[in-house]
Amino acid sequence: MQTVTRERGAKWLEQGGLRPTRQRIALASLLVGDGHDRHVTAESLFDMTREAGEKVSLATVYNTLRAFCSAGLMQEITVDGSRSYFDTCTSDHPHFYWEDSQSLTDAPAEQLRIAAVPDAPEGTEIAKVDVVIRLRRS
Image (cartoon, rainbow, N blue to C red; front, side, top):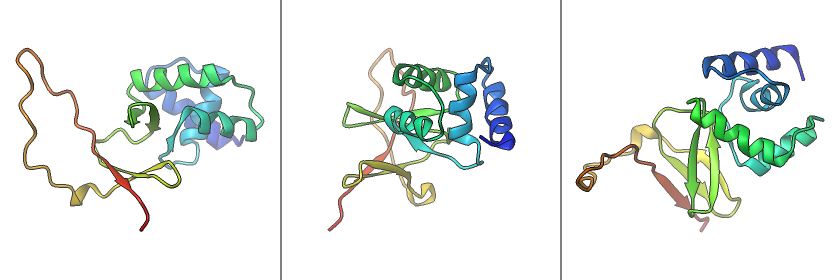
């Protein structure tokens, strides 16, 4: 991997207060090394590591993605209750889920209008509202 890509990955880890281990730097470099946001699954990131010649187990990928989320570097978006996507853009924004390719992309936030959400049950508060718009090609 290029030096600039690794430096971006290491700086990103630093922003989250995470120790820059070899595996974390490798994964961070793949996620943010080119300066673009990504939507990945653990499996797709694992495939990217193999293509890049990095030696990281799938279990390490899962654990590292969870650590990145806990550090506020990524957000997890669950689709269908069973498939998780991880987004390097942590601002509030909606997503398109493409059913045919099983991929997730950003949807234009400026076009989303939510007039109201239901009141949270007593003793709770709304932590976040995720908007995933499922798309099927016609």
